[in-house]
Image (cartoon, rainbow, N blue to C red; front, side, top):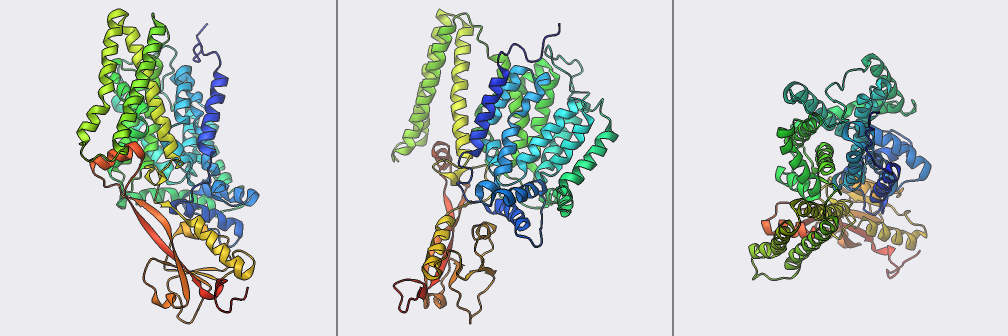
Length: 573
């Protein structure tokens, strides 16, 4: 009987459930804690306009806007509600590797599920109000249906992935170009597949493309119009490619070095073992590893060369990179060691010493000691590594090389897993310094909650009801501020305030306003915290240790008419 591709895994269902719970918690815990950024607020405001009535404008993120409109209508509006569907799609994406167990192997597929569950990049984009995680989920599902020769599902999933907006095209072009390069350039002539692996070269064979096209068209019509309730959703889905192509003519602010640094430091486990797998491809000639290596390289180059690049674009390179690293881990990890307890003891020593090295590194930067050079700090922190090398030679001398190698590998993986989990927690924006989150699109929006509280207090004092005072926002075009003030019926956004008008509240940028100072009282608030990524080597080390970055702040001023305050002359609530 042919051995199942699930290998000898005893409890795959329990393991999948555990991976799903981890992915769910990492994406939904305190989902609405941070205010929406400008890029998130643009999408959320489009969904909100569909709930409030009137003209329903939809940009390129059609899938996100349509589903979030329904969610707002059913369950109310808020930051957590605005991020619900991306978080749900990101959770489901973490479990999709199990669909590829025939190609990857059961052990590798489960490992990849756990890696994706705590991956910093995909977790960060899953907690942002856009269509990236949606596009990732359905593009992977479309690939799974393609390999399973399911023509109808291939068409349906591709149509749903198209609703993910510009992110879909970034991922689809990378995957398509990788397949063509593999098929016609890099496919090994004498391929050596692992036992039980299904070939991927014939991925397009066995598909009835006319059937797939018909189901693609039907799914696009139904889902793109939300069951024909919102007709302009379909045209918005098509505009995603226009937005993506415009990015090739726009200059971005994210440097290639910053993107590569974010990739390596956010996922060191995946990058290290994927690099090992990339090198081994030249020797093993494994067709699946070769395809994953080509896909990784193409997606990485495409993200780096895209002029309007963002660090979040690297999530498409993470998929093949993590799959390749999971395959290497599945091959290297084994419990069949002659001196198992010795290997376990050595792995604990490795984990402890590497943790001690990291704590020493942090201690040098947390203590203000300018007399100690950066070189001395790094060398001193690496001293425990010398002890590890010495211990490895001792174990190799008294036991055997396999025991030393497996112990070191287990310990190294444990340390890198802790690092990756820490990076994932920071990527969620829940760490001590959310402004240093490298996967975020746009600046961190700050103190809008304090602004809302202050406006409500003033309105309650005067009108006995929050949000009833006339509010004018002058010369500030910020989607995040519009979102924060969405519940205020009397708000107006203008370029300049008429000289004869005297609204109860005025919000301006941080500039001298003598005409307002005569009859108003002002209080400044931080609207946005903009990280400055042009840092020195020492500052980058500080970021590695604490995620602290130099920042610039965008300040706005709330002006309240003096008669609104209880201590004002003639105050009449």
